[in-house]
Length: 334
Image (cartoon, rainbow, N blue to C red; front, side, top):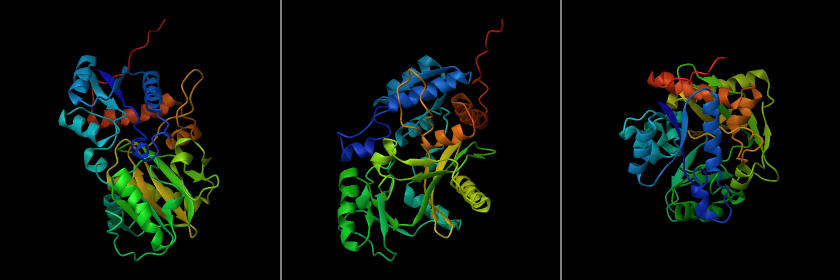
């Protein structure tokens, strides 16, 4: 049986495309190809499969190619399709993927893990009472790839709110999550595995002449990346411990990335969970350049090759499903 690697056009920039249709960078195929190559290098049979609008076409391809596990499923529709047809896949299930930032923050709050106070607005004419300290930060409730994020999303007075909320609700078409803007250092924590999750080195994100990680900063690799993040060991261990708790209470499977803000008094506040976290690493000579994933930087810091890194994530799913049919391809020994 083969491992199928899904790809679809504009998979990382669908929301941003609604705002700046002429300024999006589509590296979906290049990203999927790098994962496909890594899986092959790890010793498995693999095949690239384009996700079609008509899922019946996709299903026919999966049957024809004898696919036993899917890698790179990256939308609610894809995961719902895979679960409906009982097709194993790498990554978290529909029960988590279908939740939004509000639900996840509520779960985190229930377990008494630190996260900023927030409210949700469904329209610029229906903004809840703001009982929070300014500045605030506004973002799509289910956004990805920093879609819809720029300097104006940092709010210093109530008068600024309706315009930014309108951008998110009317153009992107999502409710707007409004939360306290925690002043501090932005970081992200990658974790891989399921039964025995491995916490990767912490990665700090700094900005070039920017207050936050805008779409342009993130997707065009304009951030200042520091991996590993320089921290006192007790602070680092506390961040990793809280991130691992978040991973477990949310029920993340195989891999995920937890974004945090480390406040000025060294409290790591949960921002959001990325179930479709970027796993891409440095492109090789002759390969098309793709956006470098944060978790890719972490893996490189540990000295993992792309086959070792992606192979670990794939192995987590194989073990979780107990897939006896997915085996490494024997190599010829002379």
